[in-house]
Length: 97
Length: 480
Image (cartoon, rainbow over all chains, first blue to last red):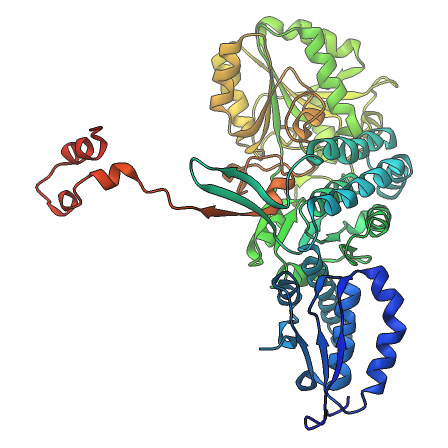
């Protein structure tokens, strides 16, 4: 697990729309490549405009958290419906306070 | 041993993590998305009804596959018809007068325990009602039916995923055991246990700390009252008791017939391949049907045919025997066949009159089957109501086969269900046939609607202890 360098500009990945299983499947390679390129930078997922998250998307979050460490990964701009998903899944620690 | 515990703990962790994620994702589903999933599962289950029934009969050695097909049809089609139009998402009710708005919320991960007697139908039933209410379900089969239950679960799950249901919305334990069940039931991430099984299992569910809906044992008395249509009654009882070789918990256990009808009723039973046991034969059947050490029915006879039981007991019954009827002189431990025996064995009592008959039914009702079901064959509405009000039974079936009747949807308008609540008599929380509505948390928006009577009343009156209740009542209810 990388220790993120908090002084570095975080890698910000912006998601929009319906992050259902099919869409996540289509973009998986791209997301994985982006995470790989982060190096020791913190990672931020911007969910402004996301109206639905599937289990597949939650897995993207878990991957990012493992890569950057819990302190180095944040999810921001979360709609209440989506925030509730993170809470029920026990992943609300990832959300921006 | 340490390794086993570690892997069990890890396994439980994985199950509940997945279920929690599925529950979370499910909260975003609309009614339309939810209903699409439910329809897909129903169709898949119905398509595989025969294959699953045969698998269940073959693996468990209990009952008859043809009757298990019927159970699968009820669990799939009848349950689906009952729940398909229910509003289970979002705002489900709004009353502008009262200002109350009802909102349906899912409960969260449900742990569904599956009995050996209905190993595929209960899987289908619980999966449908769980998914209809956006709750992921983890199914725990009986070790004696793990293959067929797993097959049913997989069919349901694949169909659900094809309809875009959340991943892991249906999970099942492939190697079930007491250890697995205990570990799962007490996990704090579980929202509810649906405990359909024996009393030990239901007790364990209640003791786990997780909310639970359980069931009770049945010891169903059937009262053939003096106004009954005897041939009709006997035919219905036969249909019910032979259904899946008597493995339904709601199946009849004892006949209580009024003296005036006794001979005719016995003749009708004999016409239909029932064999009345002699006193010595009752003793022989008791030996193999009842485990005197544990004080419960013997598993060896559960779901076996009357013919096989007769052979096991060394009784020379006719070769076409379908029902064994045991005339008894009492109810209780001295007469083990007066308790629940899930096989084609019926206890037989003759009562002088209504009062004596109902007293006998009460004895049976309170001997192991409290809260479950009671049956009356009668065309006297007053007697039906009198009987019903005295019984402690969630279901009082009238002129109906009990096995199918209690399950609901076939011979009456009870909700079709494979989890029958027995109320506090059976140490359960409800007497209902459990259905989708029991798996919802209903929230209420309560808009301001001031209590007008309270507003018009002088509040100081309440603090004046010299004012009597009658005067307070009058002041509170004054209409001017």
